[in-house]
Length: 102
Image (cartoon, rainbow, N blue to C red):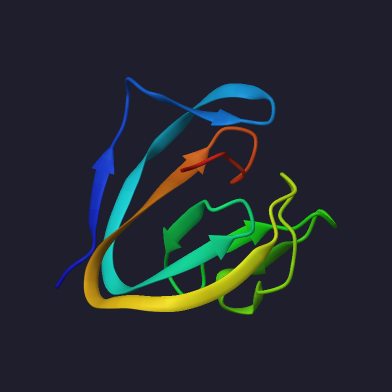
């Protein structure tokens, strides 16, 4: 399956500095994983999804168990949910590739 790029002219994404424009959304295919947090919330993402740690460092989701996010949530588990899912990622965020999701 081929990557698809959906270009954006009308929407903004929430960042630490308020809402910012972005280039669009990239759709790819791959395995879907779930990060579960100590507050009962979760993040469904790719194996190598970047998560901002409480230390201010972006780290891959697959190595984030027992670490704390920049928002104070501790990751308590990381598990595979399924194969060959559609995965989406925002690209070209104004001010850098740092934004708030889920």
